[in-house]
Length: 242
Image 1 (cartoon, rainbow, N blue to C red):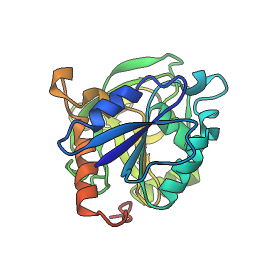
Image 2 (image 1 turned 90 degrees about the horizontal axis):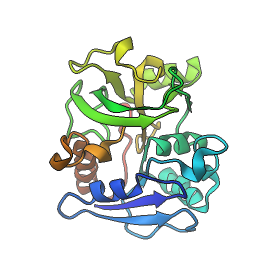
Image 3 (image 1 turned 135 degrees about the vertical axis):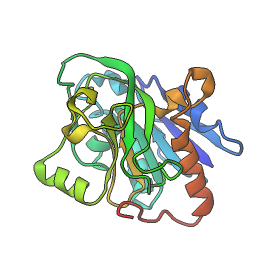
Image 4 (image 1 turned 120 degrees about the horizontal axis):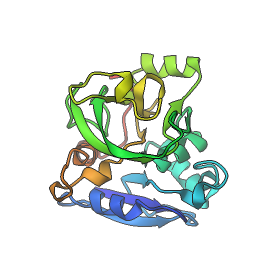
């Protein structure tokens, strides 16, 4: 399994993602510079990491969306390549049009940094295949603009086509208002595109990828990607509605 981790000016989770994605035996990971105009051959999955790309001076992800590498990421995704955007990476994917909706300021108007629980509401994706449906994982968040918002029509389409992958929940998997850390519609914490090969999520699985960190729930996402790639070496299939 070969990962490419995009590095923007202001990225601060790129090396975390680099470390986490290379933990499994046989997996390799390399940095991709934001000014690169091509993606190395053999990359199976591109990770758009968290941080504050270009300082978030205009709008989260709005400048990064125009980086030369993002043209290649869009092409890669449109050809069926796996792409995962984490936190600021999720924001960049919405700005690039690879995922619908937008991430607004948290309803508290405060930066929130803490562990949260996620209910896995779609385990039939390349990113969640080693997790059980409705299982609960503990993952950290660290964001000021993680409030997922989309039009009523878009939300209906996401929900009806099983494109919501994670919801904020309590430790028992209950989807409650109090377990929603940022005000996201329907407690949405992560979604996929219609084809199922692009995931955006606000929580940071790379920060809980090794037991030495106190929890390794996030490693299941990387394990899922590796299992999917090893069993589907030809092309990414549509997993969104299965």
